[in-house]
Image (cartoon, rainbow, N blue to C red; front, top):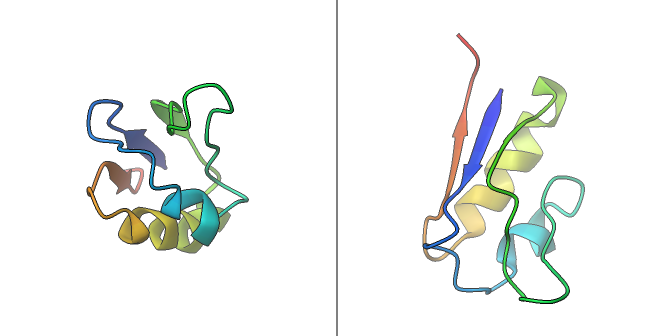
Length: 66
């Protein structure tokens, strides 16, 4: 599966990491999620969705592999 973090959409709330620290990282220097596009083990799908849904800016997209 693929996860996309919109760097222009992230406002640094940190809710993604708070809800799914196993998936999301916040940059120590900028305070933003700068992960961009990355592949994720499908076993972590629920965690990824939990973090994405917690984002108030809706800056995270989680896509299942086809």
